[in-house]
Amino acid sequence: MQAALAGVDTDRVIFEAPRKSQQIFFLREFGPETSLGNIAPTDVISVETLRRGLRGDTVEDFYFVIGERHLAKRGGR
Image 1 (cartoon, rainbow, N blue to C red):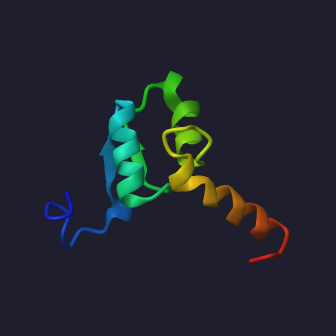
Image 2 (spheres, helix red, strand yellow; image 1 turned 90 degrees about the vertical axis):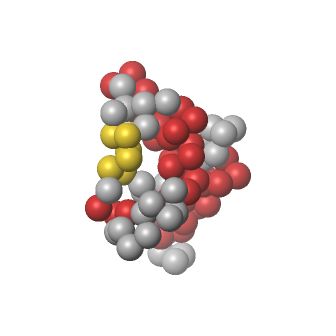
């Protein structure tokens, strides 16, 4: 994947990820703010919980996102 995207700004890419395994892969590879497409309306909340580390699949990868946002709102960072 990295070789295919060499020189590409991934902030300007939308990755199609209709399957949970694909969503987890792209979020782990490129971070919780990665743009994902082809998400079923019934899966939107599920994907957001993956992004925020609220599911067992990604809790160790992204739980820091919640902590950083909380501290920023409180003026801690």
